[in-house]
Length: 541
Ligand code: GLN
Image (cartoon, rainbow, N blue to C red):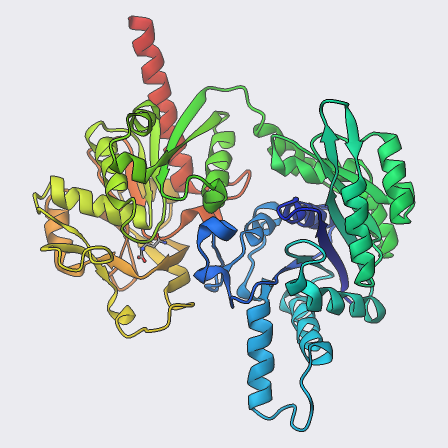
């Protein structure tokens, strides 16, 4: 029988529930258990695909084309198991199903209510995760903060499951550290525990999230007010390496406590490989600076998988990483500050994006990378803008553009994919999820992937216009990755440059600590070569 661990959050959103949930998963996986997850997002959207990344951060794409919450990215990076659209549940999905059934007459004669119809559907979806891979333990993370009106049906479903299944409730809440007096303040945490109790849930474990490790007196106080033994209170404090959190929590005895509470038998964790990987993130090696030029740079959570993929690749090469966030719109307006970051960087990355705003700034960044032969990686929109830049400045096609932002361009080098012309709905209608990519031998892409066939995740409506394929390749742009039918461009590169590559797919979703994604690994290797060249130049001077 599967067991269920619920993770709730208090005081503030983004308190670190996702990291704690993923860490608990890692701790249990290291004891040989098959773990799966469900992230609950109480908003009414059916999925994250229609949300602006500024409000909820990145949209994480699963193999099966789910447009999901970024916490699924943490589950994948920590446990290296693929998530699916089933691992993310929203209010929108719950109501869509309940209303569908009501219209189909499945509840004929009944008054359809939050309790029990909506809560039953929530419980069905939670249990469905257990069937997916036959997991022993399902970790259910309820998004937002306890007390949120929109999340109440989910807390109610969780409360009911306590009576029906073997469960464990973990409450992650903020403890504030006052620098001036050197005190830990727990009142907000106490209030959030009370709020949880109001929903009928008594936590079995409290994880205090704080800037630094809490002292014994604070731990005792939290236990006293939370009606818990002191041994049930843990602390997740700030650390430079997020992948260290499972080690920190397990060292405090979290794994042993959970194993005992859920009557599990395996008590000996094997975290040695994970520990080795975590150490690679603490390297003292050379500093490599990568400029990421996008339009959501004010909220770097919008690019979280890219940020992590760059970290994985840097750790792999024993380099220290500094990301220079470059606002594409400011580049567009000639901001000296932003452009000097592009100049300073050892490599430039242009990530995915949508719409006109900032697109010319990205083209400027790509032009700088190409003409100065600076290592460059373009992703999705980044590939599309690299093709526009090449068309304009190498092929001399004046006004070349993507029809996404210029319907009347004389040279639509990037155009809507034919099958997209019929789609009217916006939600879940892009070219989504894992698809095969055939790689040409003898190219940089082949050297990186060492394979003629890879599978990568997609999320786009536009593509390199087939009408321009010949012109582009004739001028030296290499299509080193294509869809199996040969019609769709998946990877472009410029062999005359040191490292100039872009992908239509999103490689960042498949990068893992200890297993960096090849195009990121290649970017950091090329950027490190730049560091060496600059060092030598300094010495010569
Ligand atoms: N807006 C572009 C498209 O729809 C790129 C999408 C992306 O970067 N994810 O094709």
